[in-house]
Length: 241
Image (cartoon, rainbow, N blue to C red; front, side, top):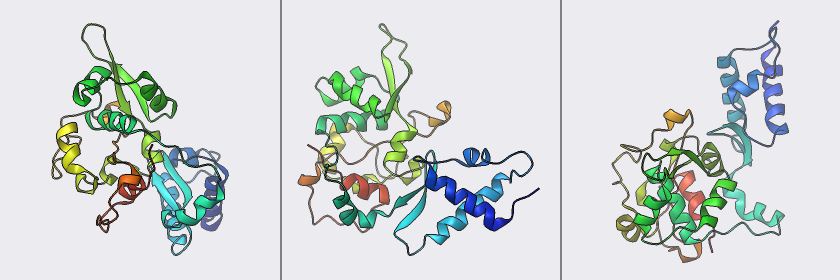
């Protein structure tokens, strides 16, 4: 027994609104019994229709790494931020540089991060990233001591509103690019940032890298952001200590 289209659409919408995290197509399919389970293509079509329904509204149905979720549109953050008295978490430049190096050069060891930065990496920085589930251990380097190899996670992509590496902002969108490029040894803008590095498919999940390392308070308001991606804007609007 198949479910009519309008009912199927409403079921998916209700499920997405009821959960507090993204839902994948596979998870949505589990809502249905064997007798009335629609095809994956039917689910995807309903999701496209729900996305279209959000046109010209304050919310959107966004696909991120872990699946689909309803969320407020970023252009209304100025007003929505007043709903919460608590200020967003701030991160030090050292923490963001560490996170960027893990993401760009993953999988990478702590010693390799320290070698690039030229200073030691605080254990609390790695701990914070792992507690936030932005970074995880994916293996160990086959050298004496077998140091842990770190890589980014789907949760990292979800947090910065992305579903894959292709949605990340270009290097041209990074603040202080001239300063950061020699320090972090980043790829050129026309170079695939994942080329010759960690292959996310080996872990069956997407990985990514942060691009904005400069503190928001230090950002140049005159910077042209017309070509920024949504991810780039989110990085730029973060406030760091």
